[in-house]
Amino acid sequence: METRDPKVLNAITQTNTVNDPNIIYSNHTDHSFSKAEREALYQTIFSRRDVRGQFTSKPIPEDVLSRILTAAHYAPSVGFMQPWNFILIQKDETKQRVHNLFKKAHDEAADMFEGEKRKTYKTLKLEGIMESPLNICITCDKDRTGPVVIGRTHIKSMDLYSTVCAVQNLWLAARAEGVGVGWVSILDQKKLKQALKLPKRVTPVAYLCIGYVSEFFDKPELQSAGWLPRLPMAHVVNFEEYDKGADDSFAINLLEAMNQDQKAIEDGYYRK
Image 1: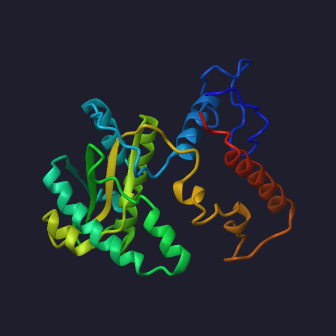
Image 2: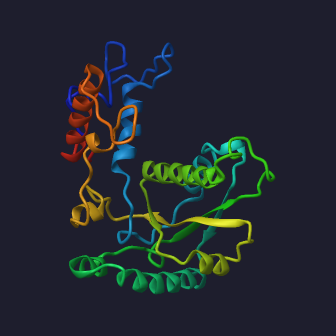
C-alpha cells in the first residue's frame, strides 16, 4: 500500500495508535480498530469490484474458499434464522445451463433500452459464468426457522435482506483474498430455480461468478463506461426526513467531511 497523507481522509480514518502510527494497536477503551486495521477494511470496501471479464483459470484453494464462505455464513440475519445456502457450481454442463438462461434474458433486456443506451448495453460484458472457475448461487430458505421469526413479523422480506448481507460478506472477504466476484442478475428467477432444482420455499438471491482475476479495475465498469456517474454523498444523505437538507453546524461539517472523503476515494486514495 502506498504512503498516504493521514490528513486526507479525516472522516474515514483517524489515528488511533500510540506514538508510532504504523503499530497495529487496538484501542480497547472505545472498541475501535487500529489505524492499520481500519485502513485494510476501508481498502477492501473501496476497491471491491463487480468482475465480469478478468477471470483467470487459477483454482481457489480450499482454505481460501473456506474463509470466504465462513465469512458469508457469519453475516447478520433477522431472528438469527441464517436463511442462506451456498450452491457451489464447477461443472461446465451446469454452468452452461445457467449461461443459456443469461443469454436469453440478456437479449430481452437489450430491447428494454432505447437509442444509445441500447447500443452501449450490447457492448457491456455483464457476466463471467463460463470463464470463472467457480459459480456460487446463494439462496434464501424462507422457512428455515418456522413461520414466525423475530424481526420478520412485520417486514416479511427481512430474510431476503439478511441473505444479501451474506452476499456482501462473501464479496468483501473475497476481495481481501484477492479473489474477484461478479453478480449475475440478468436471469429469469423461476427458470434458475428449475435449473438448480430449488424447492418451492427457496429463493435464489445471488448468482455469483468467483475466481482469481488478472486485474481489478480502478473504478466500476459502468462508471468508467459512462453509463451512470457516482452520486455525490450530499445527494443521498438526508436529515430528519426524506430528501430534506439541513444547514446547522453538524450538517455543514459532516457534508464537508464526506465531500473530502469522496473526492479522495475518486482520486484514487485506495488504489494500489
